[in-house]
Length: 121
Image 1 (cartoon, one colour):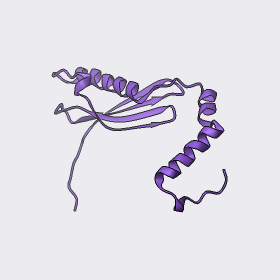
Image 2: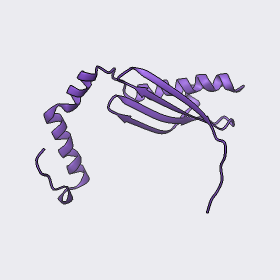
Image 3: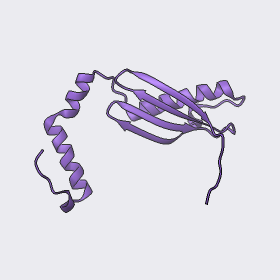
Image 4: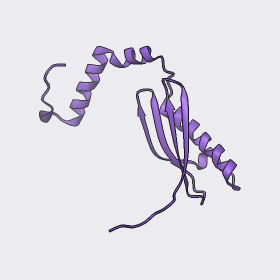
């Protein structure tokens, strides 16, 4: 990559510069082909994560939860991997973390219960 003065350009121009560099070098396609990972878009991941949370919540709670009642607090996709923090309106104090490793086609599911909450000034 040649020298590029980022201070003289807007964020959109900088983003476009990196996009063209990656596209030109085909780094993304070559990397994904080398790893052989299964592609999963964000919507597929989010739907699967919500279903996993609903299934787990239904095992732990008397009230039944549908995937439509599960909400995403935070989500991120990097290359073939996805991660999301999710919760429900159930009063059980649980929140969930779902991670998808696209290189191994594996999901990791964690459930947490808030133990303590304190205001510190």
